[in-house]
Amino acid sequence: MSEPITALTTRMRDIFAQVVEAYLDSGQPVGSKAISERVQLSPASVRGVMSQLEERGLLTHPHTSAGRMPTEIGLRLFVDGIMQASLPPRHAREAIEREIEGRSVEEALRAATQTLSGLSCCAGVVTAPKQQLRLRQLSFVPLDEARALAVLVGEGGEVENRVMEVEPGLSPLALTEIGNYVSARLSGLTLEEAGRRLAAEIASRREQLDRAAATLVAKGLAEWRKDGADRPVLIVSGQANLLDEDATADLERVRQLLEELEDRRDIARLLDDAREAEGCRIFIGSENRMFALSGSSVIAAPYRGSDGQVVGVVGVIGPTRLNYARVVPMVDFTAEALTRRMQ
Image 1: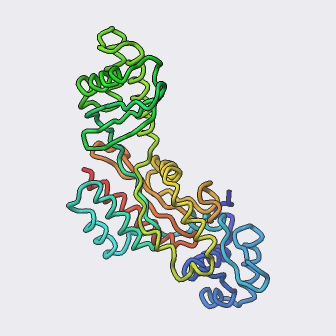
Image 2 (image 1 turned 120 degrees about the vertical axis):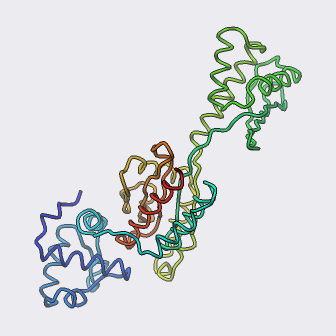
């Protein structure tokens, strides 16, 4: 936890803000001479204040002769207590709205992340509303006496395969009958609805399957439903933006970040932490476990569906030296634009 902004004197606060803003602009440590020109103080006076800020854990320097740069604690203090956020520039707002308008939900989400990625020079990310798969057909292909390949086909053409254990004695003919029963009795239902109907028919002994077959179907439906709930519907765009001209000075960090971006499930879980936020949620460096190694930041905001409930999260992932004052409003505006699209 960083100390409250009120614990800093006006001079300390002004110089601290100048150091952070200069660092975010250049990505390089900032010297006292450069700051003295901004605040109308001597370099010696600025160095004294910068030393005080370093003692408080807000600034650091990579080596003795270098200038200062903000720590993660310092960046958090800047974002929470000093940064002045405003609307994105008009051209950015128009670009975001233009790319979202008139598209299907999936196309709008993809276009939103691509546009946000381009405007922020970061990787754009969005979690899409989860749509429940509806059953069309189920079939089983025997593999051996104890296993069969279950092939589930959804109404939208989705195909899910799973190797399942079967009770001894279930013949290939019985497996075919199980598939026919599900296709005839449960077709058109979501996996959750199909599970409930099957459970009710088992309880009332109205199912046309024996107990072993009914148990096999119930188990399969439950596992598919759980897999669907856990599987993130995540779109990531613009990873190439992370390979900018400044990346050559820190290739290991960028390589680590690109590797972290491959883990879609963990990214989706991280974005889920922003679902309850009123506006943007900002994770800086080691504040999030996933991007602690690469020292990256995540800015994310929820968007809502027609019923006013949160249906997804949109945001960007990039280096900690992001221009937060510029990027935060872009993410916030994109979330608002997606919410309007969902109405």
